[in-house]
Image (cartoon, rainbow, N blue to C red):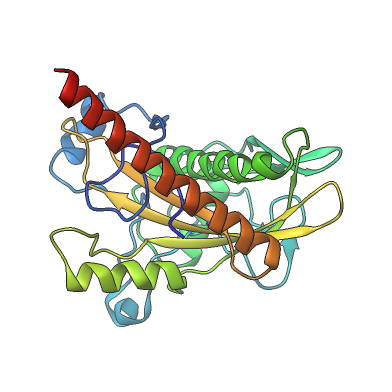
Length: 278
C-alpha cells in the first residue's frame, strides 16, 4: 500500500511508484507468433478487455472480472461460485482445474484461483467480449499479479515481524474507486504531465492481512499499466502499502519514507565522491 515502494514488472518511466527493486518477470511467454503479432502494436494495459456493449459502455469501469463482493461467495477464494460448465456459444474447451496460490488463508489452507473456465464465465456474466483462446493467458496474468502483490506485502510485514508468517484473511476489489494516493499522483500528473504519470490505476484491491497476534492490517494495492517492452511484452506496476488507518501503519509508512530519503542522499553522496575521485 510517504511514498512507498512496490513493483511487479518493468516500471513505467513516469509511474509515481518507486521502482528500485528487481523487476519481476511476467510468466506469460510473449514470443509465440499468436501473441506477439497483437502485442507489439498495442500498449500495455489490464489484460481484461473492458469494452462493454455499446448501451452500457459509459457506465463501466475497469476492474477485475472476478467479483469480490456480494452474496454467495466461496470462502476458499472470496469469489462467487461459478459454474465449470461451458458458457453458451463457447467454442473452445477451457481447463477446469484450479491453481492453488502461495498465499496462506489460515493455518491449514491457501487461497485458490479460479479455473480458466470460471474466469471466462465471469467475463461472460459481466458482458465483456473476450477471445476464448486468450483466457488461459489472462488467468496466468491475473494470478501472477496477485502473487506479486503478496510478495510486496511480505516485504512490509517482515520489517515488523521478520520471523512470522502472516495470512490473507479476506480481500475486496474496489474498481473505479481511486485511493487518496492515486488521486494525489493524478493531480501531480495534471500539473506536471512530463514528470508524473497521467493514467489512473486500472484496478484497486484492499487486502486484510492477519498477523500471528490476531491483529489485522489493511493494505491498499493500486494496479498500474506501463508502456510495453520492445518485444510487446506487457508491463505492470503495483503500489502496495499499509492503509493510513492505524497508528502502527502510519508509523510504518513514515519509516519507509524516511528510509527512502536517506537512501537517496547516500546515493547522491556516493556519486559525488566517485566524480571527485575520477
